[in-house]
Image 1 (cartoon, rainbow, N blue to C red):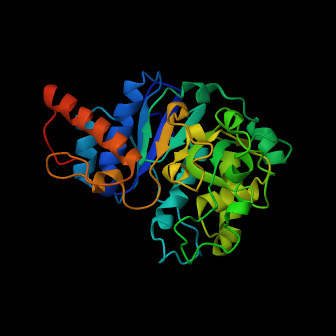
Image 2 (tube, one colour; image 1 turned 180 degrees about the vertical axis):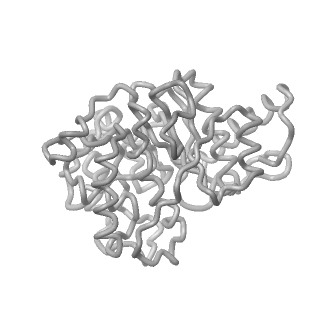
Image 3 (tube, helix red, strand yellow; image 1 turned 45 degrees about the vertical axis):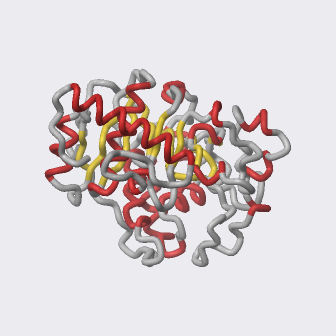
Amino acid sequence: MADGKRAVESDKVWTTLITNTAYLSGLLTLDYSLKQQKSKYPLVALYTDTFPEAGLAALKARGVPAQRIEYLLPTQGKDYSNDPRFYDCWSKLTPFSLAQYRRVVQLDSDMLVLRGMDELMDLELDSPADVVAGTGTRVFAAGHACVCNPLKKPHYPADWVPQNCAFTHQHGAPDAAQTEGADPAVGPLGFMNGGLQVVNPDKAVFAQIVDYMETHALNMDFADQSVLSDLYRGRWVPLPYTYNALKTLRWPGVHDAIWRDESVKNVHYILAPKPWDEMDDQGNFTGKDETHSWWVKVNNERLAWEKENGIPKDGF
């Protein structure tokens, strides 16, 4: 909210960015999954002016708090025509600005919470003063990006190969990988994934981030992730993969050496297709990735709950 008010009473919140209705089913099922896991903290939908009235009505009907934010873009930014989703990703830096909250854990809308994660609300991070001064080593917490490029996308950096991936360095100790994140210094990249970020919001820290964004955006291949990885290189807390379990890690030959279904707290459905793209009109799963079937099951449970509780059917 531009006036600095809270959308909810809690000073600790989950947030998720929503700019269009393409991800709205994902957001609603994410919210449902957090409630199913009995989280003590609310999910706040951060929406931009590109998000339509029909979407806001859908959030309101389900009691999901909504908070308007400005759409964030650098004055001069990189051309993301190969991956247009990255234009929206700059706005995922906004949680750093929400100083009306003491703790924000930002989640992507294409996630599904399978086990409780409330402990992230109490994870120790640096004070904003230490961050701005450059003395802190725990600016934020996040999971690593997988830099294996398993789909061999030609526009990805040439150094995004398995030998440079932090997760590859954990293959020899899979038990430890369930509870420990790889050191950001492992491998030459030290790159974070922006799908889950644990943040202590502060206006001065946000100003530092925006200033770096404005002066370096033309060289940022991955928008928000590039900014945070470069600006705070080696100064962030690496979470184990279980908090931001990129679906590709489970694929044979990627990082199935460390993936354990029973350990995963939060699945992240990166890349297309999304699980909601793989359902027929009866809600049956039509895809091949088993993790997508997990989402379809929970989504169908959500829809059944909504029907039982008289929430009007609106296609989301």
